[in-house]
Length: 268
Ligand SMILES: C[S@@+](CC[C@H](N)C(=O)[O-])C[C@H]1O[C@@H](n2cnc3c(N)ncnc32)[C@H](O)[C@@H]1O
Image 1: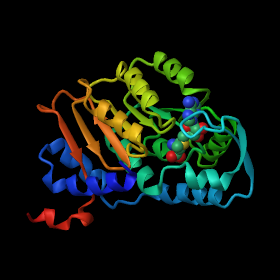
Image 2: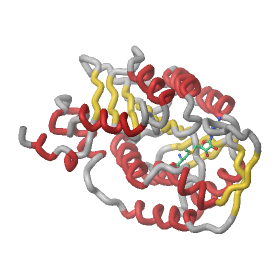
Image 3: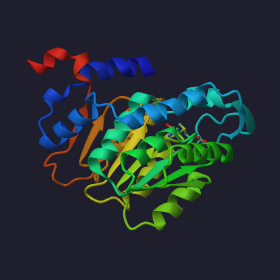
C-alpha cells in the first residue's frame, strides 16, 4: 500500500482521545496532543532554522535504508536538515512523552544533526541520553548543537547501530525509553526491537518513527506491536509507541488522531 492509502486507512480507523477507555492511555494521549508550548521549542527551532539555511556541506555515509549508492556523498547541510529530521510536531510530541514519563535512561537510534536529541535531552535534563549515529559529520554537528543549547546529558556514540546498540544496551541494567529513528528497514527494525526488549521493564516504552514509510516498515510495526511482550500500542501515524506494562488487562492497539480531525467524537 502507498503512504497515501495508508494515510487514508489511518484516517478512517483512527479515534480521538474521547474514544480511549484506558485511563492511563487517555491521560497520555491527551498530554501528547495538547497545545502546550514550551520555551525550549523556540530555542531548538531557531537552531533548526540555521541548519535549514546553512550554506555548508557535510559528508554522509548512508548506513541505513536509502543507501543505494553506498558511497560517501557530499551533501548540503540544509538538504539533510530538510529531508532527514523529525518535524517540529513529532519532536514536540517526543518532548511531552519524555517530560511526562521522566525516563532516566534513554537511547536514541539515529542522532543525525541532533535536533530530536535536543528535544529529548531538554525534556528531562536529569536523564542520561545515549544517541547513536554512524555518520561522523552528523555527530560533529549534533554535538555543536548540544553545546550551543547547553545540553550536558547526551552521550553521542559513533558507529554502526549493529555495534553501538548492543554495546550500549550491554552497559545498562535497564532501559526506560528508546526512540528508533534510523535504518528504516524491516529486518533491522525488528532486530533492534528484539535487542531492546531484553532490557525493557514494565514501565519502558519504545517509539518507532516512520512506521508507514515503506511496506517493510509497516510490516515491522505490525510484527512489533503484536509481540507477546507488548501490552499496548499507540499509533500516531508518524510514530508508533509500544508499552510493556502488565497492567493493561487486554492488549490494546490504538490509532489516535488529533481532536480537530474528528471533532464530532467529543460528543458522539
Ligand atoms: C532519520 S535520521 C535521524 C533524525 C533525528 N532523529 C532527528 O529527528 O533529528 C537517521 C540517522 O540514522 C543514521 N543511520 C542510519 N543507519 C545507520 C546505521 N546502520 N548505523 C548508524 N547510523 C545509521 C543516518 O546516518 C541518519 O543520520
